[in-house]
Length: 281
Image (cartoon, rainbow, N blue to C red; front, side, top):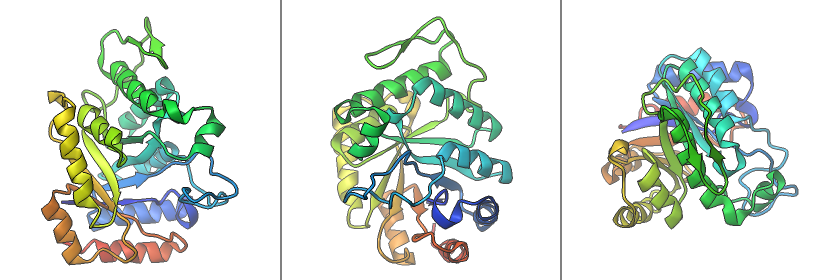
């Protein structure tokens, strides 16, 4: 089981000095991936579903990961996650390919359909369309990365007689990781993702894995995607203990992604990284 870290494109850890210090520390400690989340806007005043205050700062994940790419050598760089229906898929495909080239193929593209209605409304996307948009956008981006003459015809995106280069550094495009815990998200992970990204407690994980197994019986998995990789971010209120890490590995987690909340002091985050680097993996 590999170790990753998430969330450091927000709050007290988002500055340039802090980013260089913590990214290099994570790489030196043996973490293999660095993940950055996204909210374009946040509801103000805060609503119950929102994970952050509207005044909490958070950087665009692709811009942040470009900076991290330049100051590291081995860390995989993951969007964890991009809210895909809010993006223009052709523009995002270009941004992703560009970052994959500059990072020498280290990019992991984590995407989700989104869940905050005020954020969706603000960017002009209907909640009722978000699942269909997510599926179409994934297929359209894959076509642009992989087809010799890219074309796509869908309800929300359509193109032909165009091309885009450079292609991503990784053959076939970067690895796609699907976030979410709904039946639709599980089916999307099976049908379109190289991996699945979830979060929650240790007790939540078996239920999520059961949902993925159910989805595998309902959705066809293309051979090109290989085995579905499991990435999981514990949201337990305390630090991950060695026994819990062993349990995550036994349940089949491929990548345990730690989240150094509350992100109020970069030195506390550094100590968190040092402590969790000793977990069995």
